[in-house]
Length: 96
Image (cartoon, rainbow, N blue to C red; front, side, top):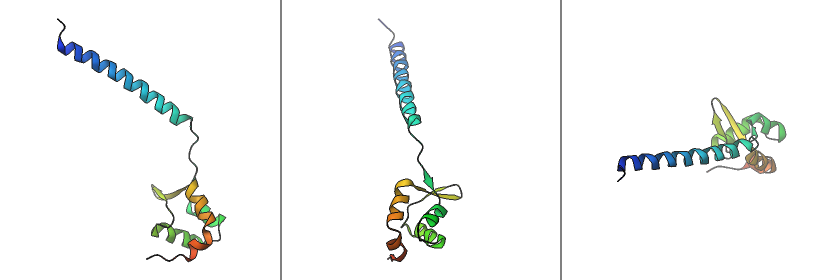
């Protein structure tokens, strides 16, 4: 009769190997993807008729979604495209 403790240890080792293999596969897949392009508020101001103060106010109000990275605010490509297409209405949109 086998020791139950040894059986559990062997099962744990097998699970760890499986988890490590799956984690390596996930990390490799993530590393293969292209990095996500981020834009600064200055980039939006340069590519739209919006002034930098308007862009900052829109970020503060939540009309432009930006992520804070240290002391900088970064905007994703999708949000940048949305803001560029809606620039005129964004400038005059009122918040409640």
